[in-house]
Amino acid sequence: MSCLRALFFLILLPALSIATIGTAFADIGRVKSASGAASIERNGETIAAEPGLALHESDTLVTGNDGKLGVTFVDNSRFSAGPNSRIELSHFRFNATTLEGQFDTRLQKGSVAIISGQIAKKTPDAMKVRTPSSILGVRGTEFVVEANQ
Amino acid sequence: MSIGANTVLRGVALSVFLMLAACARDTVTLLPGADGGSSGTVAVLSEDGESIALINEPYQVGSVRGDAVSTRTASAEEVETNYGDLIRTLPAEPAIYVLYFEEGTTNLMQRSAPEMKKLLADVAERPGAEVQVTGHTDAVGKAADNDILSLQRAARVRDLLIGMGVPPGDVISVGRGERALLIETEDEVEEPRNRRVEVTVR
Image (cartoon, helix red, strand yellow):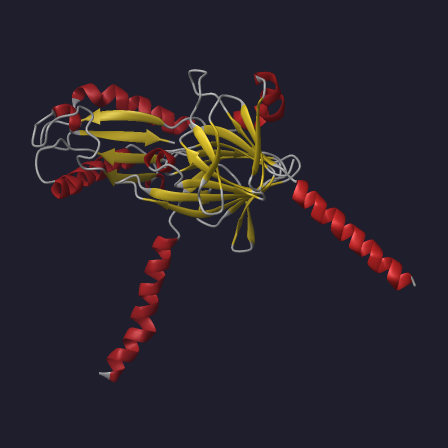
């Protein structure tokens, strides 16, 4: 009995945890275009951005002087990042069956153009963009945000 | 003495930094919709989620510093100069293809074959393309059963697309049951046009 229990803790429990982590890291979107200095920061690591690269919650889009990025999300939202930008995808939840979700972005510096998708269409203000000095609630629209002018 | 001067300098530098930070303004510019009119609304919110100002006219610019918001209207030329490049970097709009099935089956109807061909060409053309297959049902049967049926229909089309060469990692299937009827009907009404699968290519 104690042997079985040990087996459970040694093998099954870690296996279960891995399965859970697997779903927590679900793709929330993809890079569609990248030029110049453009990368994704994930858990302190820098990943070169290229078309097809999957995005995860908490990733930060980073561009340098000559950098540009185009990305899409699973709710059909679309972003483009201008040069010298840092855009953190702080929080993303989306239920593709009910279309309910929450999408929080933090523009730390630079600029971002946004065309909102199903999350903002279904629930006003469920999509938010935070800048160093403001909080914006998105109610189904196309707009550009620039930090620190 | 030199330490004193250093401290003063640091104090001045800190004050300048703080003043700059306090003066920093973030701007939000609303773009026109496809018809040239307003594309919607962006609300400037307070920390507790209250709406302070609404930006809802084409090319309206809101400058925000904390709770202080000033608005003006920019010209199309100004927005093009400042953001033209950025706007053109936005990825193409996702395209939706609708496929129909023979009743009670997952067999694609003959008339949907050309749509399938267009879809595959689109997938090949988009960089980093991904495909979302969304199944729908009509209003006949229990909502929960229709959720399952719509997902089965979507999964079948996913297999079909993979068979046609779309990489498995690029296709997801979703079921929306009877939540999004194409043709609005009362509950329990048969409607072939509602028994469909929509394929979104992003």
